[in-house]
Image 1 (cartoon, rainbow, N blue to C red):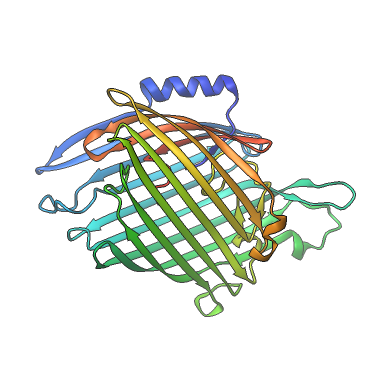
Image 2 (image 1 turned 45 degrees about the vertical axis):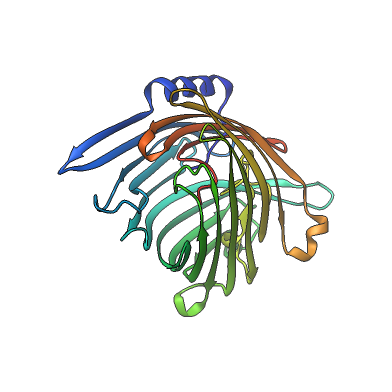
Length: 363
């Protein structure tokens, strides 16, 4: 989850809360099934959304106590409210079944988001334009092991939104308010050699997703989206020191609407929170060093490069966007390798604070 710009005093308060109070994890024995719970209260400030208050919580468990091969499943909820009127919430369910032969992800959510984008203006250089999006969504992904560590799956997404742009009064109303349905169907391919789904210490995974947006499934635009991920985990000193590399691409082609574009920092590279760099395609390359001290505390350092372009043919004119930072970690549930933490990152004329359950790069 991405939570943006926190001023220095609030940052210090949040560090104290995270390290002493707001990290909560417990084990509950219920009918011989062990249930683990982790929750993070969230404080946030952003120049775009104002002060934010929320909570992220997950329950981790084994669906079958006889299944020793499946990773831990989880059920979670996230809610957030900010002082500029932004609010959103989501429920999500991740299941690993039948000795990891089946993997299921389901989620539903809704919200009202007051945000901004950057508009280039000839002779003036450009300016941020505010907008409000009211949206709801539902997602279901089912994957099946084909052979070895290779998985194939199907994915369906329902998404409905209303976007109102903060434009001058002389702009026609049909350009100010945009209703958009973005339902899609797709497929996924994954090769997963990680030793753990939540916090890997070694191995690698490759993930590919292709979504089709068509009118016959209720989409107002005809286009396609592609997501390509490659993560590699290099153990330096057992689980105490890990080096992680990541290559990520989020690509939209065809009649791509505003809501279908990708934003640098929205879902991947840390250090960008203002929404300035937005286009059809986003590419990133990153590395992260993870160090766990004696006991449960740890630290990370990371750096990456990103760009946002309309199409790959214009890569030579792509903006150069570095981002990097540091973070703290606390292993709330050692048996399941579940970390809770916070990252501070700098980007090009931007920065951000990120709270998380689990590690970056675990998609």
